[in-house]
Image (cartoon, rainbow, N blue to C red; front, side, top):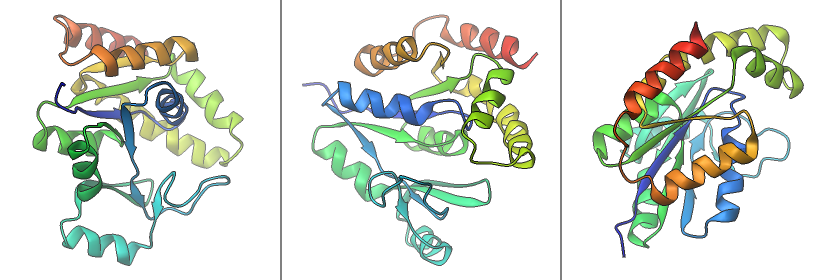
Length: 204
């Protein structure tokens, strides 16, 4: 059997990362998602321990001091962190592990796990991303404007990732993600150049 692999998946808000991960987990029994801790309040339909471990800021910062997280970052005024113990337990049980985190966390994980595979989910365009955020009807225009500014900054870090997936057609994006998780142990030759060209086109 091959050694369990760690996969890091990031995307700007509205990129479709959560839906793609949920669909992938239904397709592949050999992959498990590490549930992150966060200080943000649950959104409608989210369940503690399933979507996130929801904790208050004092508890989160205490866990930071205890070294409980492999990575942690502050995003949109809230803290997010990946449990060291949970990831180690999944890997020891022979599972490939998905981490649903942002580019800051991905950078930290890459330092500690150089052989991990990092994947960034892109929208087909910034205009499409804004439409998706508006369609969710969860945020005011002011908040959406802020998310768009943050998204542009996040996209500028896409070149740090091993693979980029454009989430235009959901089924195709899911196939791409599954192929990377199943077979993408090494970044193919020329992938960095392709990533650079794709990001330059999106951000121009």
